[in-house]
Length: 317
Image (cartoon, rainbow, N blue to C red; front, side, top):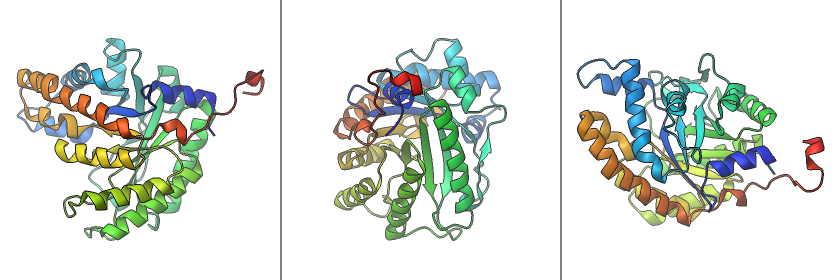
């Protein structure tokens, strides 16, 4: 079961069908670096402007947006760019892409916490966590997750966890069987700890396996193990691949998608006028297509039942 507050906030982040089609633009250092490589460094104002361009173009078919406070939703709230009916998720972490995944830990955004998220009007929080159930630092990472679960319970804020499975051996990819086994073990662990929604990678390396029947079997195995709602992340794959993955995942029980670069990656390398045209035409069409694709998914409330709210429920709330 979940609380009334979390239930309400999840409702604000999903559509009437109980499905998520969420735009992700919380990328910071890596994205800013790519924009800088186009010729000259991009300043804070330019980075805010880029993110606002994404939001203005792509939120029409989004139920919510995952954006960072500094360059994303903070300025966008102030400029009334994110409509009141669109939910907002905030990251908690500073991401270090330079360290190998097995060595990456959790560094909080300085000066930012869950209480401030609530005060700012955010509907949920997200944590990106490189993870393997049998890695040496797995216990420490589970403790971090448990701490955030407790804080989210205190403030009734939904917790979207994004655990990315990595190999225990550097530069040695996981086999298909190792990947799905690790993901199944992982979702069982984190659902048991009390995470509200899992934001998951596709459980098949599609660059080496093109069989959608195999994809479907893996997604159904993942869904059967996952006792909380889960959404599919795009992980930077090309849009046509992600659309196929989303169809398979939602048919298998996913409650939607949280998608970023698969929708807007090409815009990074375009001049401002061409970027605007691309986002308005191609990007917006992709978001509309994904909103239709997730229609085959499982409503999130089928896996999260609210605490009863009849009578004088509020007295002990």
